[in-house]
Length: 131
Image (cartoon, rainbow, N blue to C red; front, side, top):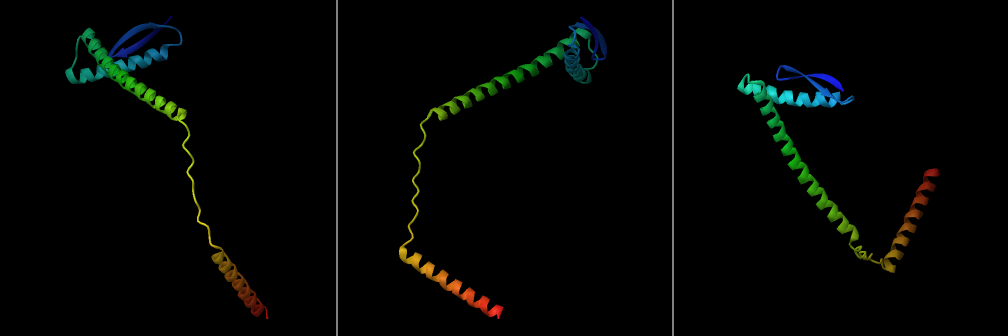
């Protein structure tokens, strides 16, 4: 066991903890000290048991609120997982048929003729530019 000195509300306490858990104890003491400092700043000096009781109650209130939020988040995750499972189990939708309009052969022939004329004109321009 380790002995750790912690300060809460301006008072030092010697607390025992298991080896390797000192940082957890220091973190918890810091949270309790923050609440105690809030109480002292609002009310002033209190007897030690009352200050620790009120600081503990404030932390318990925060913990209860966090627990409620956690339960709501768990319920939300469960609902989303159920919805996801339902969507995965649902049959795949039928593929949508896309119809591409067919270009009439007359238009294809006209476009080919225009392309041939454009190539012929380009050749004439190149010949004139070369000479």
